[in-house]
Image 1 (cartoon, one colour):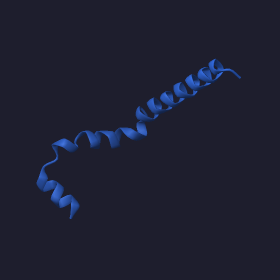
Image 2: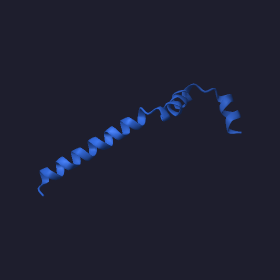
Image 3: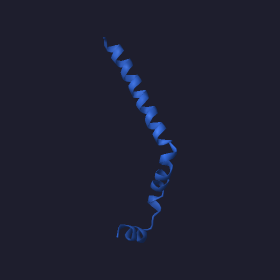
Image 4: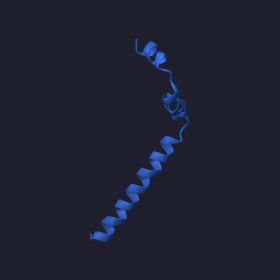
Length: 53
């Protein structure tokens, strides 16, 4: 097995990992979690104090 075969296999593995991450990020299960995280910069400080106890 020469270096070019290894590079080709590594490229395929990286492509599959990338596609897996994209599928995870765009899945419906993550939508609510990401929407909540997107609003974090706009949370009032007094609401944070109530939330944390």
